Image (cartoon, rainbow, N blue to C red; front, side):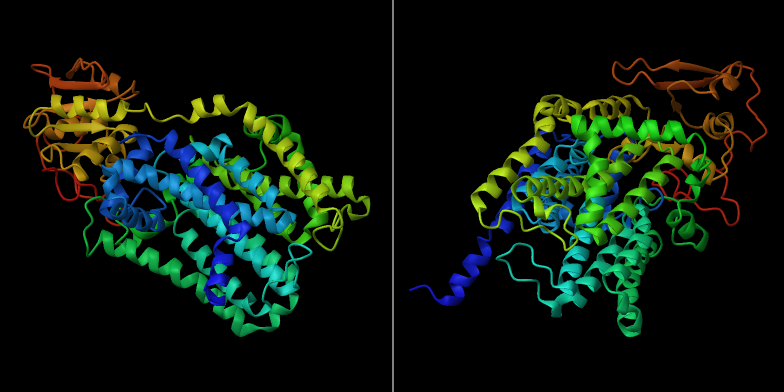
Length: 566
């Protein structure tokens, strides 16, 4: 005989909303694993594959939350294989979490589990989102955090206002409202430790909270508790970053954040401030670029996103304040920060857009099934309550209509995000490391330095090689390319990794620069002095010690330049 408690637990386990969310998450996970990068990559990918397993510090803003999650995942996922593959798989897991939470978020906003699943799956197969789940990238954690934050805030609103999700579903327990808001504050603090885009959530959350419960301003103690819930995790993850760089001496630390100057240099992303452009220049082009991106991600239903935003303002006005303000701030920031991989910054707006589309679809169904429910100001309409089969059928048709463009574009999208054959970095690094002479010095740049660092730090290969990145040259005041060469050319083999460089002409007449001739690493160049050439270029004497950093300058604490080159 099954006890009442056991039956209750079984009902909770088999709750349709939970099963649907987990199912959509598993689909997203499977899609990402299907297209997963098998090993190490180039550029930031290799860096993120490295810093997690060794508890290092990534480039600004450091991503300490991602590093901690990556370290734990690297341990738990050890049976999968090498560290790079584990970190790639972590992105697939995080995206699955984001999709699962999005399902319930959209369900609560639209009042339909069917549309919640549609929003989750639609998010999963949108190209930018899907691509993030195929290789190591902290944006996968960012979108998971964002989904959880929005879900907690919507749950809090429903608890405060006593809104039921469906006609036969009881409202949330109002006594849990305070805990939900504090939980949201904690997650926001952790999210800030992962990506600075989270800071753009600050004004939208404040406006949302005041719109839901203006009386909260009289609860000073509760406000203080929320501020503390935000600050404590924010400070702790940054403190852990400081300890790794200083006392714990992690094997890879970018721009030593254990010093005061280095900490703010990393935390504030000082090296990228010059990338910001005139915020109001070329508005027409920026809008056109955004329109092109929207069409590329959503296909024929792209124009519905704007309609959905307007409808959300009527059907879920407080969520519209939260999500709409977040959308506007994020899109505006993206337009003035032309990062080379800016597409990744649109992952949050894409998730929000799918929740809007779910609300729009529910509104359309209410209009068809029960015209009186159109744009109800009280939340989710009750149209079709007497004919549940008709409403379910209409919701299914509406949801399918939203997914048809993604279904039609599925083969092309799968090919676009496919990283399964991306073994170029592994082949390249194998050839380079095998070709380098003992105790070689390699002057590289970021896209390739990270791959070499991964080989040294994680795989413990070629510790005799000194890798000097262009970033190190700035942080250590090493000077021009010719000056770096002068430091080592008399005592160590010197190589360059360049793909065309404005500094190379300055070497003419002083050095012979020849390709090593590797089939998959043609950018590896060997540098030898020209007999009788003057090897001093305004820098230190030939073969002299590496320059110490200028006072107050952040120091790249990489394995090659932690002290002197080995």
